[in-house]
Figure 1 (cartoon, protein in one colour):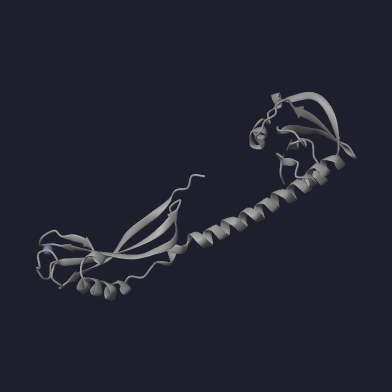
Figure 2 (cartoon, rainbow, N blue to C red; figure 1 turned 135 degrees about the vertical axis):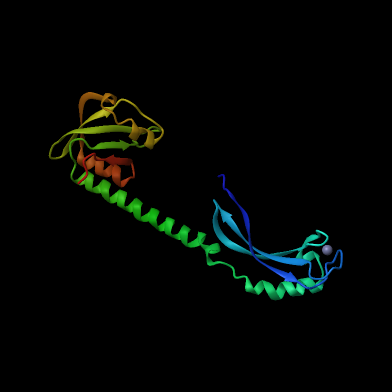
Length: 205
Ligand SMILES: [Zn+2]
């Protein structure tokens, strides 16, 4: 799977230091900048990767990461960086993942309940996509008549290895004008074995 992940760094705050520049030794020319960074997945922040600091000298142009400068600058950085708080949004990926996960469980339960409802109370015009046991391709039919124990259907002349594609093949010209009967009990059995990919009803109430 291709995942877009990485690290993002944001500028947070800057201070003027009176410590001498490690390069030109001028005073009051160093600016210390503090950055925060987070790991992201698909540009959604997942966790903080802490703070980093860098200095820039306005006199000689010296620029360096704080940890590669000297003890004096590093000490000042350690004091000042506590003023930069890690935003809570840097961890928002986890609750978001949690919500998406439970939402998908709930919605798949809804779809399953809807299928059961359609099987229990079939209507003319219902469109089924299913995969017979042991077959590689999905098939489809449209209900043309509902009798007590039997659904009469027109088969779709096409098949597809994709259930979704089979759903899109639901056009009048795809159906063979020949009635076939399916016992309702058999369809329910397929449903219990997860053999029915989808049941669509055009005129939902
Ligand atoms: Zn300098």
